[in-house]
Amino acid sequence: MGRAVSLETGLAGRRALVTGGGTGIGRAIAHALAREGVDLAIAGRRPLDGAVGELRGLGVRAHGLRVDVSSETAVVRMVADAHERLGGLDLYVNVAAGTWHQPLTRVTSDAWQLTLDTNVGACVWGCREAARLPQIRGAGFHDLPGDLADRAGRSLTRVPPSRLRTGLRIAQQAWSTWRYEHRLVPA
Image 1: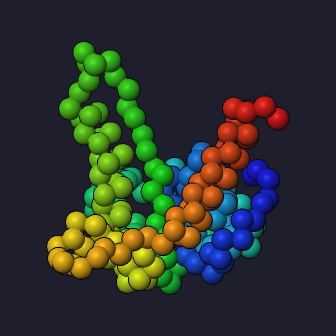
Image 2: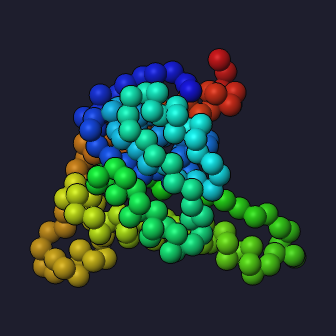
C-alpha cells in the first residue's frame, strides 16, 4: 500500500490503537505508523485480516479488533483489548466515522443518534479510556477540563510541539498516500 517512506519520528517500539484502521485513511495512517516501527491494534466494523496481514508484513505486531464504535461499552472494551494485546498503549488515533444519509425531511432519530454515537461518542469514549492509561497520560495527553480543575492556579501542561509535528507529519503522509492511491491527485 503506497510508497514506503519513513519519517524518522522516533516512534519505533510504541504501541497504537487506530480506529477505522482497516480501510481508507485509517488504514493509511496504520501503514504510516507501521513503517515507523509502531506495533498496532486496528479496529473496524468489518473483518480486518487483510489489513492486519499487511501491517505484519511491515515487521510490526498487529492485531485486529472487530468493533462497532457506536457503542460506549464496545469502545471501552476495545481500548482495554488493545492495551492487553499490545502489552500497553502509547497512542490512540480516532479515525472511524460514518454517516447514514437521509433527506432532512425524512431523517430518523435512530439514524441521527447512530451518526452522533459513531462520530462524536466514539471519539469521546475512546479518548476518555485511553487518557486513563498511565503511559498515555505520561506521554503528554491531557484531559484539559480535568487538568484545569486539578491544576487550579498552576500552568497547564501542553502537548510538546515535537509530538504535535510528528502527528501532523504522519497524518499528512497518510492523507497524501490515500489521495494518490485513489487517484485524487495527478500521478
